[in-house]
Image 1 (cartoon, rainbow over the protein chains, first blue to last red):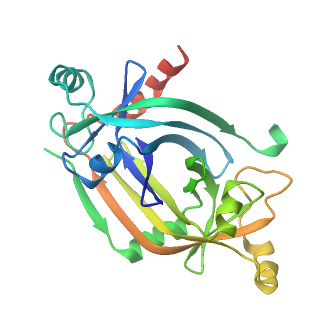
Image 2 (cartoon, rainbow over the protein chains, first blue to last red; image 1 turned 30 degrees about the horizontal axis):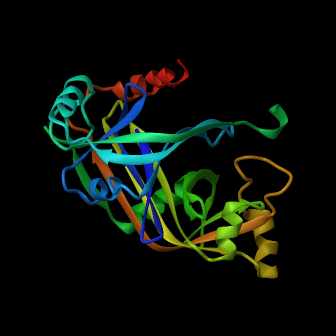
Length: 118
Length: 154
């Protein structure tokens, strides 16, 4: 479970998606033709993928942000490979949808902890 | 069976915003989008947080658009929800209001010397949704997916 951040007409959006790893790239399965799939796959549009775990009680946690660009996976051999090897999507189950792959330009991570412990 | 997405009504979305205090803020900064975790309170119908000098304050001074998101996923019960707030940032500058906020505003998630500025995200749109997982998804696989991220350090 990760969040993708993208920008449409200068407006940022945050969406929750299922993302998994395929050979050190991040792949996401979206409903085919959905607004999100269309927006994410725009070649000129930078996308962030964010994962975190933040504990409000202890004020500890971590967050990782991957910056890159997403492309729809169109090659049949590649989509068959992803269908076969990736776990089911929480929304789409085992099959269907459009695969998107993030080519990462930058990966940053940070750990959050109380000031007294740093 | 495929999973389902249900729309949450705005009252439910606002109750979830009231009950939680950690979310993520996304900005469209000069160098492209950024996203950061923030500690917040849902105060007077706005997302209120503290910040210091940096992209968040800069965006607030320019009254730029931003997005804020909270979510929670329950792997055991195969359900989850998310709430997205889209609107415009504004720094709180009114002296009377600042006096009140110094005693009520949340401590920043990351403690630091600064974080003296109070910023509100004034919502334009609040949308929430509830997600029921597809029956193809084995309970608990998301946790294993997170553990699998060690592949990045190999």
